[in-house]
Amino acid sequence: MKIAFHAPMKAPHDPRPSGDRTVGRNLVQALRLCGHDILPAPSLRTHDASGDAARQARIERLGARLAARYLAKIEAGAPAPDLWFTYHLYHKAPDWLGPAISRALSIPYVVAEASVAMKQRGGPWGPGFEASLAALSRANLVVGLNPNDAAGVAPHLSPGARMLELAPFLDPAPYRTLDGASSRARLADRLGLDAARPWLLAAAMMRADQKLASYRLLGDALARLGDENFQLLVAGDGPARAEVEAALRPLGERVRFLGVLGEEALRQTMAGSDLLVWPAVKEAFGMALLEAQATALPVVAGFTPGVAALVAEGRTGRLVPQSDPAAFARAVADLLRDPAGRRRLGASARREVFERHGLAAAAARLGPALADLRAGPAQPHQPAIHRRAS
View (cartoon, rainbow, N blue to C red):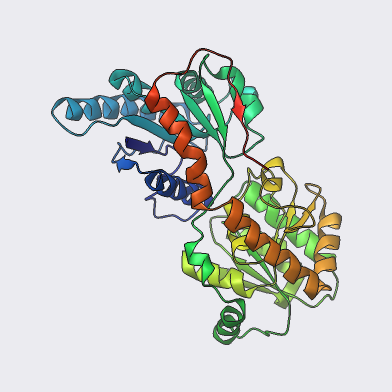
């Protein structure tokens, strides 16, 4: 099929690195692996972080114009998609393109990673909330990457719509040839680090939202370790850099800020480190957790249903109660003092990612679901959740 791919939150070609961009790129790869062609779709970033009603109205009007222009080009002979695929849909980033275009072309409309927060109805993002519900009512298939979203989304689907649960995934190819020992040696030489000292790694952008909350909890937790011997490497940057530095200041010289790293540099840093530490406050799932495990780096993270879908407690890492710095500190301390345990968890994590969270596994789930849409509309029934095999 020819598929138009749209990401109203952040396009796959956006120059700013983030987990959201990574997931979008991975979905495009998986669709191509299924044998589909990806057509260029109008580029419209609808995300509004501030709840600005005037800005949201402008975006809505722009969406209507772009949709009309896109349809006019198809009318004039441009290739038409067989299916529209929108990634990451919620009240702050509604889809002003897909529902109108799929309806006009009479093609299936698919949404991946949608969420519904009923408390937003009538609030600053009220128009985006209503638009998201309208989009869900139009969807033929909703692909869920976060198991926590399904219960909120299902009531807003039309009869005959389907839900497919898909484990977050990545392309394992760049991770297969990584060698932790050589990565560590190069990093130690380049950054002047003590290779005999355990290295903890935090990898996240620095924004004044849940990311900052996680950094603050991380600083609180690690400060409880007293004189424990470790080096904390921090990969990331952003507008809340000063607040992050303040949160980690009690750790003194044990912190090294690396700034924003490219994809290969981040993989090498993960491969050379000993433990990824991230509280994951209110995180949907966190691609950095998956990427770390692909390098055989075990994880200590705060529990959310999405994070638990990636990190298996006691098998690939440690999960602690959300927003509990004391529990987080204990889990980190246990693994700092247990190098063999870290290696066991890391090896299991890498194996788990390659087997259950690779592109091939995702394509094997997506392919049949999209083929069913091409075969014709589903018979009316209440939305059913097709869960991945455990």
